[in-house]
Amino acid sequence: MAVHRSEYRVLFGDTDGMGIVYNANYLRIFEMARTEWSRSLLRKPKDMVDNDMYLVVVNAHINYHSPARYDDLLAMECWIPKAKVKRASFHFAYRVTHKDSGQIVATGYTVHALTTKEGKLKRMPKDLHGQVACLAIDEIPDVPSE
Amino acid sequence: MAVHRSEYRVLFGDTDGMGIVYNANYLRIFEMARTEWSRSLLRKPKDMVDNDMYLVVVNAHINYHSPARYDDLLAMECWIPKAKVKRASFHFAYRVTHKDSGQIVATGYTVHALTTKEGKLKRMPKDLHGQVACLAIDEIPDVPSE
Amino acid sequence: MAVHRSEYRVLFGDTDGMGIVYNANYLRIFEMARTEWSRSLLRKPKDMVDNDMYLVVVNAHINYHSPARYDDLLAMECWIPKAKVKRASFHFAYRVTHKDSGQIVATGYTVHALTTKEGKLKRMPKDLHGQVACLAIDEIPDVPSE
Amino acid sequence: MAVHRSEYRVLFGDTDGMGIVYNANYLRIFEMARTEWSRSLLRKPKDMVDNDMYLVVVNAHINYHSPARYDDLLAMECWIPKAKVKRASFHFAYRVTHKDSGQIVATGYTVHALTTKEGKLKRMPKDLHGQVACLAIDEIPDVPSE
Image (cartoon, rainbow over the protein chains, first blue to last red):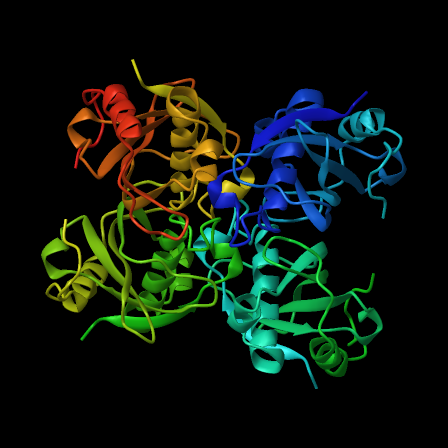
């Protein structure tokens, strides 16, 4: 199943004055998760940008379920929900949990379109679109939908 | 009208390899906007935390309309939408524009609940809730709703 | 005297699990200080990059004197030490203090060279070098030297 | 030999408008390197903070040798230089290279003291100091000294 799993260890610099990962940093964690999804299942991220293909974020949504603290080991899951694959855009969905306990830390999704480095919208090449559609999966349980 | 306006100058460190403000950094910009809203209209942010009141982010939503680049001067608007003031939570809504042209850069909202520093949910004090309700406004045009 | 003074209000996102500004964030604060130095005294930062002139950081040094906390108002001072203006590089020096008390928070300096956007070293144009030399000052007291 | 080696993959969010890792982010990379050094050789970082022991950064120094770009795989080396182990402070030294080519990206060091979470200086416990001294090594070649 095309859900990619990777890990992230919380840095002290990720936490804020409440001792928990600062809200903005989950978008970095999401980037990490989808980059590894891409490397593992689709294309090397570097090959994408070398071919002037940038999957820019059109909008982003994050639900903060429970805090993550310094040195916590997080499990990141990333996938493409089938229902959200459109001609010109698609979603990445994310679930971040505590690696050990499985407790959900954050969920969310980001909507992506393909552009050049200059930010010009680019028609998604047929092979890329086909691969994305092929890797997309039905919504897995307990994850956010739009 | 209880819309607070402040400004932010884009740092080089805010931009990414596309030369535009990285998606995660808008959540910092949103924090800046609501902190200044609070200082100007409600309470000094420091007084809040000194009284062990933390307005934690429960979920966050960002729409990226057009890019902002290094050294751009951004105008940030922040307000509380009236329809979203609940007993235990409320929204901050944001609109970030290019100061000069008025072009919209990003919009979004964050949902907040009151907790202690330890993250324990806290009943919102009546006077605080009353002030929030009082400062809340009808949705201003062109902004995202849930 | 060519010391530029600006202000910065600490965000919650700047602090770490100790409740103080995370060490890396001072390099962002330094960038802010030297950008405003440049805008005020030398050239608009945007004009620099539009002319493919990037003052890259060759090395950086930070001394952490006392902590800064959420919502603290910081005063940033930035200047170019005269003794450090070389043909191909120069220093920016920084002092960050608590605006109210004057207590020193951090000092430091960064060494800069001129490059293109691609990172190629570029001879510093005579007029730019002349202006930099002209604006450089003798070391102000209580600041770090190499 | 007590040099810890770990890896880091550059995020798009780490890069700036020049397409290279932003100068401040190396202090995050350094934190990552010394955290893994500690986990591997000394103590779990979490055990440290659970015992109210924080190895705060007193000063930091970074040399930027060559740029790192999006999706580059970096090798991080971290060690404690023997000559810098004092009664109340010690150094971590770092070398970041391109994993494949071995080309040096950045070097630097940070000086640390032990404090409580409140930032109060704390005498280093004898066993901790002994372990640090024991793990310290002679300067490895091509690295920065004070």
